[in-house]
Length: 472
Image (cartoon, rainbow, N blue to C red; front, top):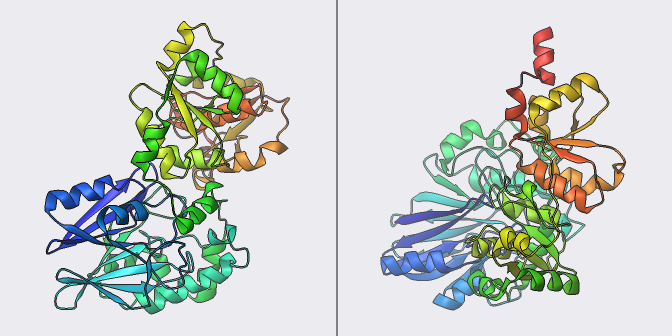
């Protein structure tokens, strides 16, 4: 048995290639089929099946292009209703793959069709379990995403189904079964995911509280439905895209979008199409000079997640300003989450724009030592902490307001535009993203703090929790 885990770090998403005796299956493929085809070609194997654990919300699946390229059968779990050719498996239905057998275990909760695939060896012994979002490392998938598509499927109802599925389908499997989850730490599809890319079920019984036999159904539902952050706006659209199908492979889409544009053509197209300028350069280059009105989402860190959070229209025409040589990567990452309306990119990036004498803006970053002076002189300044509530509770600047980036996007209309805002996060990335977003919305007094909280700590400023600890 050969198992290859392919991880999209930008989405904290894991897909899998499974092979036995020259026959292969792919579980939850990303939109670009090329990596899976390459592995099969290198191994001289034939891809027989494409197994989907559910209709994914955070990315566009590559199941159809992969099936078209290989003749593989697309398999979903019970209750799925794809609008294209696929096999909807019955609960406990089995599929032969070389010397292996894959058994579909219907585990609704994250979504109604959520299904795990249990791999049995040639002796019928359980070996591995591909869990999708049903069971993550020290967590389970959120139960609130389907409600974006079907309002009657409340988080409490789905969380109850999750509890039943975990108890009835997974809890009884042997400790040595290896769990391969669909998402890793950093994915918004879970709220408590720990580090690690796989684990034994036995170890998860010790560390994952949702498998605690002492946890009752009501407490599980309460845990699963409490303090859920709003999902990125593109999630609901991706579910529908994956159910409807018909999208080209990401490689084909990238070729259509990679159109270089001279500065004058870039500006003309932006005006004609009312396109949004998306600047994906690194966080050090953007503040020095950027095109007025550009939205910054640097290609580093969780680019796809923040694009989906900030741009809620998948059909929004986009024009790119990217570091030279990264354009194809940007287009591919956008296509992975369903943003296919890229009109082109600025040829020569910002140096070409500057050489053409086109207008620019710059953004002043505040050195952390200057922030200390502001804190000492004016306790009334507005400081927004863009990290998660958990990180904020751990430590934060005195007087800071917790405004996670996704929360800021939803509540920006409630902030007065005539105040001066100082922004910080864990590295400086999210504060710069937020600052560009706020400037586009008409906030003219926005200052990111350079380097984020680690740089602030180095100034000797005592954070809020440190003050309480010192007093105790």
